[in-house]
Amino acid sequence: MNNMKEINEIQQMKMALLVMTHADVENAQKAYDFVMSESRDFQEKEVEPNKMTDGIYLIKAVGIPVLFMPECDKKDCVAVGIKMGSKSIAVALKDAAGGKDVTLTDSEDETEYDGYINNCADAVADWSGKANTKHLEKIGLNKDIKLEAGQYIPSVGEMYLIYLHKKALNEALEAVGGESIADDWYWTSTEHNSSYAWEVSISDGSLGIWDGKDTDSSRVRAVSAFIKKQII
Image (cartoon, rainbow, N blue to C red; front, side, top):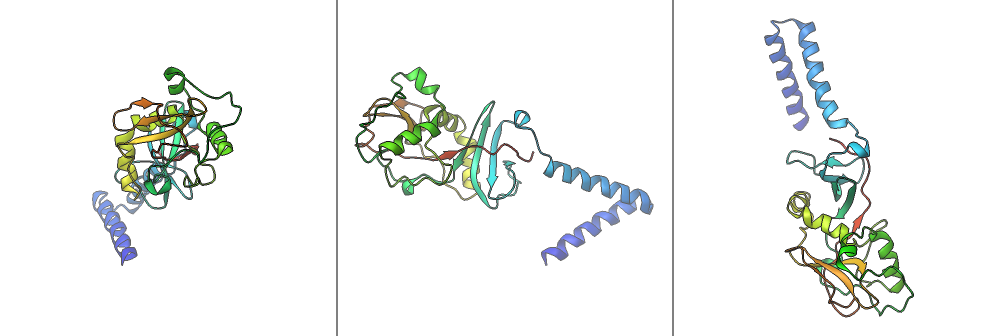
């Protein structure tokens, strides 16, 4: 039935073009080809990464990401992307650990590590979530935080990218059957010292370091690298 409906709609458009061109089949065909080519150009045009439009993107299991709009195809979405200037991340559809508050690590940090960031300005400028997560895994990342291949825990800078786009990001997440970013505290992978890691409140953007990595609990939302090509 759906195929029949589609054929009928195409036939109706062709008939309308014939009427508009006074039964001039050649011109009607040219008009039809022009309309359909414009539609294909819109759907298939690939953009270089440095020419990408800032915004929210739906990342599919197969194919290139699509700029999120109410009318776009929302099937088979595996993540939601954010692009702002030179910064971009792909956000998982749901919180890790089933949405529960969890500790960041299973044990105390006894490693020698030169990646601690103990002041706010440097923490906000940290975009090294992938490298940070490798260190957390070395310490003993909480086993409830199950990261898929390519995923990592966002740094403070990456978490603020999520916070800045919270409203539009949540609209996209809900549209594809994901879960909204909660108005709650989220762990980042930016570590303050051997005992504490930075957290960001998605409710009001507060930044805190008073919770112990292996003793206190917050939410976790995994991210991954953003795919570089998309449909506009």
